[in-house]
Image 1 (cartoon, rainbow, N blue to C red):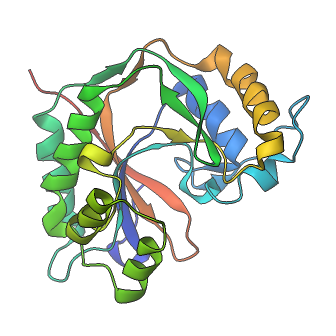
Image 2 (cartoon, rainbow, N blue to C red; image 1 turned 120 degrees about the vertical axis):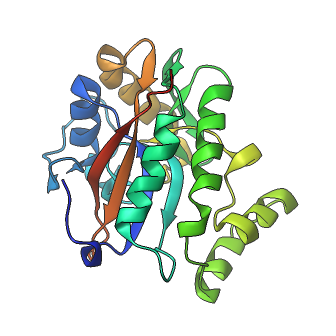
Length: 233
């Protein structure tokens, strides 16, 4: 973990699991963000499409749940100050327990999502998003236009303008992405296969115990830089 500030193109704050859950997820995606290296992807029985095809889009992020979406560092800010800010937020927040995770479709892609609405993780994400906003450089015009092409509702469009990402605060839904877009005809089979694959390793509950600071390298791959324990008393 670590690296010089100039090595990282963008930063993000994720929830990154540990243990067997992490190992299974990183192998499925083919990228280990903790070790910073590729992983051999499994050939799952009954999977109608190759894992490499299904994971092409989310692979570079590693297994994670987004709390603060990727952002470029604002002019005049530095990585040390960013770390200090994350540590302060983490020190004032409690660990979050999610009762259960299951494979579900989110639009055209599949993800592990909570079995029910989880207000605590939404509140944690809101704290991180708003607390780190001074460190986020504004989106460029092309970045803004790319996001606006996503058929955003008015509230999401307003959040994009304010926070550089449309799916934060009241539009946030915690999830750990498993695939890119999956053809509708194959979606059910892929979901069933992934449900069987992940069921033995999903913690009950799944605890978010820290904030994971991530850095994106020049090739687009995300690496774990540090973990900040959620330690409010």
